[in-house]
Image (cartoon, rainbow, N blue to C red):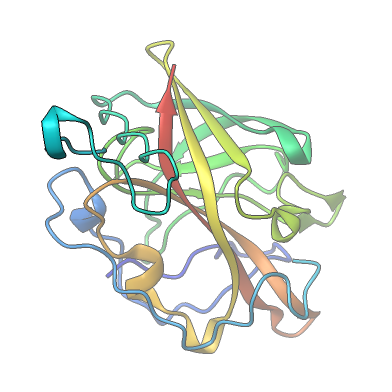
Length: 229
């Protein structure tokens, strides 16, 4: 399983270092979906600032029995191309993206502390729109003030996250849920496990903050691909 993130010496958004290293299991060849876990979930921003078939009679198309329109088919996953920017229109976020990997301790890196408006995209996982669990991380704040994901915990389900790629295309994700997980009970499988469809998990710090231990939780936004352009 992948590690808990947001571990950088000297920054306020610090995490535990006792999880396993990131693996490529969340990439395009993933065969299993992530197991949904609730251990440690506190709900959104708890204590932190945080296709229709055919075949009816007489050749008529049959729709859902409740009279609603059939769900639109999922978009076709995109081929590999790195992320260059990430937008969350409802929060006013329009940020550049940099690739991140693992540090010497095999912990997932974060964007440089002196670039608080930069988003990190894990290079070992899927690129925007690819099948699997893609990971984006960013600071909630630094010593200089609020950072790119300061308001991430306020993002409601149904809102869009748009990620522009190096090939000029854009992957559009729709938020499914926002959760705050205590770092001591961080659900690795739910957050970092592989997925059969293109998904994006956006992570920052949350919960309570103390100078001795940093933030107590992580805010995680769960989203899935709903369109491309």
